[in-house]
Length: 424
Image (tube, rainbow, N blue to C red; front, side, top):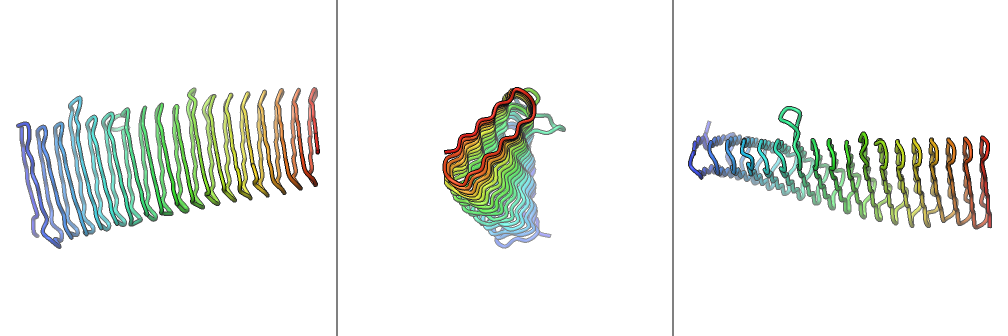
């Protein structure tokens, strides 16, 4: 067995560095780098290698590790960096070009650390970044290739929760990649950007307060995005010129407000589901423009929540909302969207539902159970159907229709209710 490099450097001085280089077309070689002391640097370069093993262990602050692999396959890279300093500043950089079935693990236990992974035309690579220090950052960039898996963990039960973790993933022209981001505790931030690919899967899990997730898709097809947040959270998802993408946002928090926002432009056959189960003051926005056959669903529990869904200049869309609690508001709009449907249900007191449609062959259904609820619907066009059902006391229902061939139905059960129908 040919040994590529086996280096043990114990530098108690301010700076020490080591480097290991692989021969061309190397197979089954191994490189070991161990450094103890502040400010050490380790560099490993692999060219046209396969089944190689690289292990880097650095213990002290300001340690830097760099691994570069080109046109290789089945190589295994493991980087461990440890520091107990108040400002550790650990750094790890991995670059893979034309790599196949590579496995990379980066573990950093120290504050203000950074991990960077860049992949170009790589396939079936598996990269894992574990960071256990406050204000740590991970950046993953993937261009071309596909079927790669990236896992970023910031904070854990074993090593402790961390504040201020930041994870950024950028994908361009990738197919079938999987991204998993987990952030534990407060002030976490996750950003995922995908362009010109498809069948990518993104999962973000954030536990703590005041965390932020942003997912941006451009010219993507059949992507899946799932965001799970617990605390005072913000989630933003935008999709442009795509199709058949699926977005799920699940937010929960005991007494903290959450915000979920989804914007889709010229995106067809999109499915969006938002669930907010905080106590109060949650807000969900869904805006779909020039879209057809899109489906948007908002479910909220608690009080003083707001659900807003707007679908404009498309057809065959469905907007649904379910609110369980009191003093909630639902505002659903479909503009120039033929053969579309609106369904809104509110169970509780003092809720308000407002729905409007412009187009033809559209259906609108508003249901409220409780007292003091208000339901208002407006339809413009032909052959539309508007239905309002209210169960309880002191409710108010209003249906306005302009056009021809329209149908309005109001059903109220209880006392002190009021119904108004206007057809023009």
